[in-house]
Amino acid sequence: MPLLAVCEISKKFGSLVANDKISFNVEEGNIVGLIGPNGAGKTTLFNCITGIYKPSHGKVIFNGLDITNLPAYKVARLGAVRTFQIVHSLKEMSVFDNVLIGAYLREKNTEKASEIAKQCINLCYLSKMKNTRAGDLAIGLKKRVELARALATGPKLLMLDECMAGLTSTEVNESVSLIKNLKDKGITFLVVEHIMEAIMPIADKVVVLDGGIKIAENHPEVVIQDERVIEAYLGKKYSKKLQIATQGREKDA
Amino acid sequence: MMKGNKKKQDLYWYVLIVLLILIPFIPQVAANSFTQHVLILILLYASMSQAWNIIGGYCGQVSFGHSVFFGIGAYGAGMAVVRFGLPPWPGIILGALLATAVAILISYPCFKLKGHYFAIATFAIVEIFNRLFMVWYWVNGALGLDYPLVEVGWRNFMWYTTKIPYYYGALVLFIIIFGIVRFIEKNRFGYYLRAVREDQETAEATGINSTMVKLSAMALSAFLAAFCGAFFVQYNLRVDPTMVMSLQVSMVFVLVTILGGAGTLFGPLLGAMILIPLQEYTRVLWGGLGRGTDLILFGFLIILIMVRQPKGIMGLVDEYFNYKKMRKVISAESDIKY
Image (tube, rainbow over all chains, first blue to last red; front, side, top):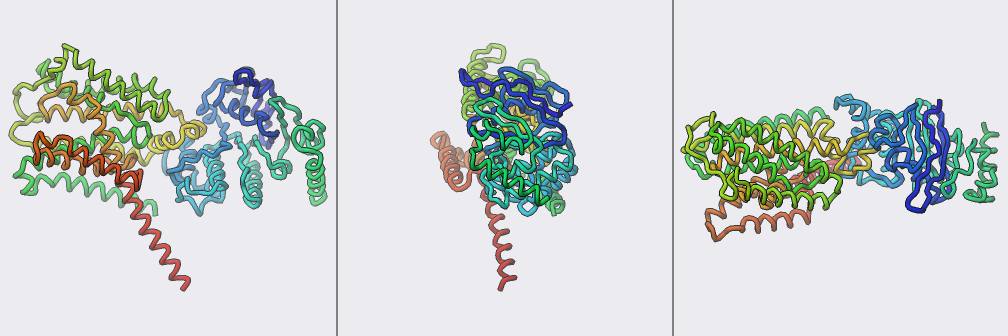
């Protein structure tokens, strides 16, 4: 049984169809990438899964439970936690307090929750700025605080909405290794990402959306050669570059 | 390091309580009933504002409707004494419970509104309750309730010749309400309140039921505000609708907290320590002529402080200490370098 099953999700805003009968599965322990051009409906799909929007049609099954019409906080309590594309950090609170709020979901006791928060802060390389106001951080660090907060809730499935956009290449590499580490700890990922170099090497599967429709779902190596994906999103030159890059990596390995 | 800080804060708190207990033993205070009156009002207003601070400061839902809960508490005690000839206590409890129920009933629909719209909705609620109590015959309408002469003592919570017991009554109220907020501030509920204030969407995505958090904060806040109302009427020995249920009273909750620092533990106390002496001494100085001078000055102070620091006086204090700490760090670093 997959950890997350998205079954024929449609979302309409008036006459605009943002998601049209999208189905895919996320298997436990995998990293699944969700890619596509701007306006493809990736974030809308995220919102449908996490209960921020009610889908017009279709079902979302998480861990064997139908979560389609559950409010956002219940979805999070079940263990499917997301971050936002536009960071929503709790500005006036310190980094530590931001993460502590996540930790309180599974642990009511303040001391134990603080322990969890400390661990997550260390995992996300944030220990140096744990007393800084979250609002004072640069965007890359804010995104990492988001990740740490989501992580502190003890999720089964982490859904990251462009958590690497706008980061420097060093920061991207750090985030990639962080995701890999967390995957080894048994967390499943669903990642929306535009940075192909970051997502392609680590994804077990990639789902491609275009204009609200799923146009491809396969291993990354297959997807980058898919005609429709190249036409809709990657472009010929870029696809070749990616292919060479992945081949090079395989040789290295 | 954090544990040491906590112990220090605990120590400050207990020292403050002891000082407040000892104040009436100062001969100047014991001999001057006006000073006692000012002190009682400071404690009362600090407690009222702290009750508001739970929902308005920590949770960020600015409510102008708190005079309704304050008024229901006041009328609870007033009705028990005037209408039923009982001691005020059952009325106080009933009033507080009623205020909580009213708070939950009116805020559930209002919490669908966000930010300014929520504040505006609470404005309307004050007006509704004000008119309702004005024409409600059973609670004596616009005439209000005048207390009869009863036996003095703790049973009736009433004294005529001394203010000292009122002072200790206010102090108990103060310790209870500040104690509750102190406890909340360091625990899960307090963090959830602040999370909802900072960003409701993030709070929800982190598994926090924000509606539930706001409703519980409102219920607790109204419950405590009602106790303050009951104390107010026991001290004042008279209550009418405009005295307790009006926008002016609501504004006091809000302004005192904002000047002192919304969402901080000692903000309401600082705010009350400024507003009350201002209010009482201008009243003494100019009598009826000076009406409103205190509010003019107070408003001016708020503008001055908000321009500099939106977190009020407590924000300024924090800023100062952070600055000092920074200076220390910087000088320590430069010591290493040179």
